[in-house]
Image (cartoon, rainbow, N blue to C red; front, side, top):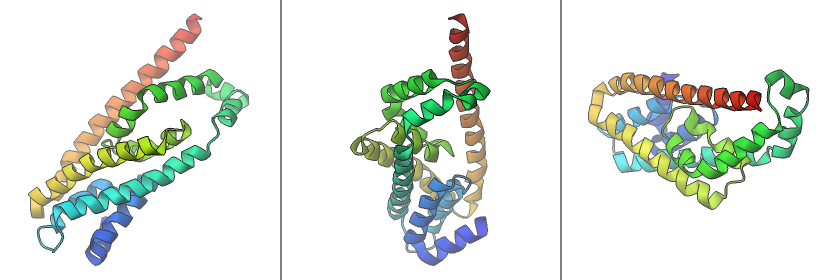
Amino acid sequence: MHTWIMEIMDSYGYWGIALLIAVENLFPPIPSEVILTFGGFMTTYTSMNVPGVVVASTVGSTIGAILLYLAGRLINPLKLQNLLGGRLGKVLHFNKDDIENSMAWFERQGKSTVFFCRCIPIIRSLISIPAGMSQMKLRIFLPLTIGGSTVWNTLLVGAGAAAGASWEKVLDAMDTYSTIAFLIVGLGAFFFVFFTYRNRFRK
């Protein structure tokens, strides 16, 4: 996968970076870390520069995020509640209240969540869906998305440019970061589910 990513970037420059990042948002298994750090490295031997790569990657991030946001808007919370209120909900041990509580939580914490999740691999793409489901205003969603994406893109592009020919070493550090981030998110999800069900059983 890395080879064709680099070939596209070498052939199309900024446009290739924007396209790859947009696709990465829709298909998270495509590694943004490779795209961004290699893009940073490319600024050391091509006419491209760091600000240009950051802008191109942020444009791609925003396009992909908007598409997932719109997909989230198409998901009807009421239908999802009815679905979880039936047999599927019983199998998964979910009910309608879980959806209502999740939506209420996202309305309270959604702004900071959208911004900070842009700096967590995989989740940085998927966070657009619950933002759309919660009917977050696009005028609020876009600045948060652009801001968070700019931070993430600047850090990785800058790291790739600083590392130069050793840009792949940045990926090793990102693997460690991703592992720690997933662990924290996983523990957070575990405790959220644990306390939710503990309170329900107490009732």
